[in-house]
Length: 67
Image 1 (cartoon, rainbow, N blue to C red):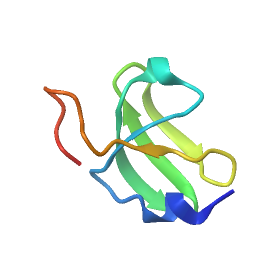
Image 2 (cartoon, rainbow, N blue to C red):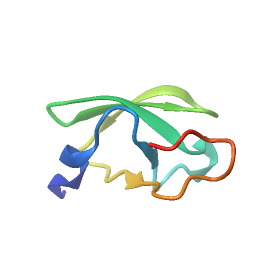
Image 3 (cartoon, one colour):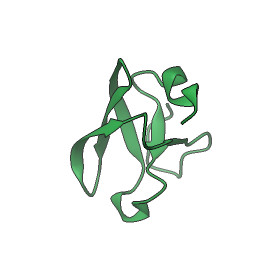
Image 4 (cartoon, rainbow, N blue to C red):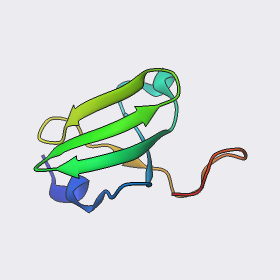
């Protein structure tokens, strides 16, 4: 897996590539490859960055805070 998840910082918006129904989540923390994200339709989820490459959302839809 890539180190791109290491660039994620609290406040950034992301999507889970395998769970599009979770919606656009906000990164809460990123500690040693464990990324905690608060998704609107799944709640707080800890993602193992070694197995999942989260997708940054650069242009959030209206109504979402910018990361």
